[in-house]
Image (tube, rainbow, N blue to C red; front, side, top):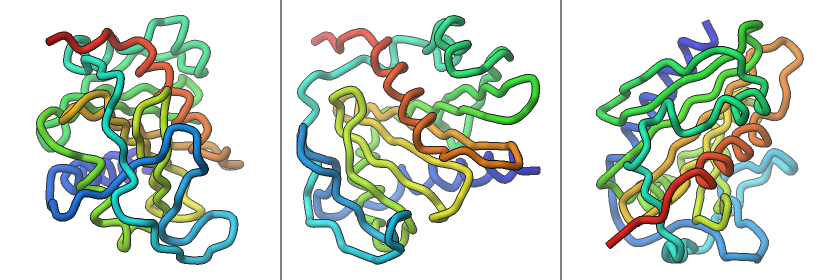
Length: 200
């Protein structure tokens, strides 16, 4: 049941990524501290993030060059405790892949969004997102979100290049839930590290 809810939530996430625009806002400085908007997991307080935190992508990667289910090697999947093959997914027009383990304790999903300024669109909705952190993943501008402060799913949206966004979701399915954002970030870092440079 949790897996079904996670897929429905991801569909809503992808729909919101493509929707809305507005003033430029998003992402985190190269080495500075992260800024958060909405209740933080630590304090539960609400702090509005400064406008336009997202720097340009300085090392563009070609996210469209590899099929989603081939974005990680078998050894990398094993390192993330995944022992089942990826299942192709297509949600709201974004191609993707979903992996889980045989014991069904964890689930990863990746989706590829081409053509939208996803980080800006998500950041423009920051006042409606319970947890939003502007950050970086493998040197690329990124946003981390959770639909609930104590939720079992964590999302990273990473700008691989202009209008090329990697969306990663990790969901903990076991009873004693692990922090979902650590595995989600590690997975996203691995994918970004596998991408070839964007040519042209």
